[in-house]
Length: 198
Image 1 (cartoon, rainbow, N blue to C red):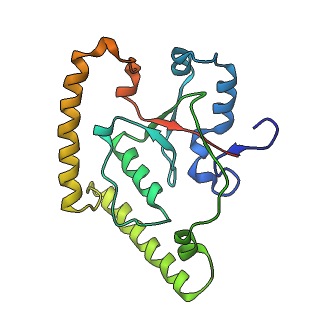
Image 2 (image 1 turned 60 degrees about the vertical axis):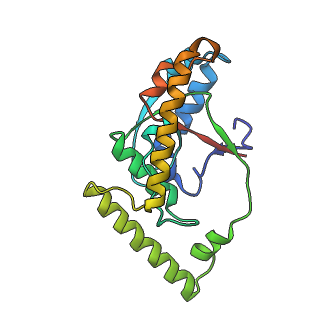
């Protein structure tokens, strides 16, 4: 980052997706933290508020993750819509942990991206219009307090996963001393992970 060979993810071409993270603050706080001092990471963490189109990578308890609206397939507003649902559920608040990040390498545009944004053809314009209408419907449903659109199969899988998770938590409690302890704050917050594009 300091040599200009990497930057905060999409800051130069889609800043509204990650600017609420305040990458320069994240980077400066990261430089101040000692290596492997998790307690210091939490002390230097800071809150950020959700803004429209914010799409951070996050860590949160799986039992608290809202279902993903299955109408969003392929490229385009899929992560944006899901993070809007997460923000609604969590009161619009995220925490950023210094020194905790992902690295994304540059890659070719996907076929899915090309179908939505790759040309000025009538088909591409139609795909953009459909996506825009879908997102409008999604945001209206979200504002009305409705859940994401998912299949019955997905709801059944969610129930099964939550049941298995409860069983695993019971097992975990019995063998707590043998495992690496999870920081107590992780159970109560949603943490935004900055991404560095290299």
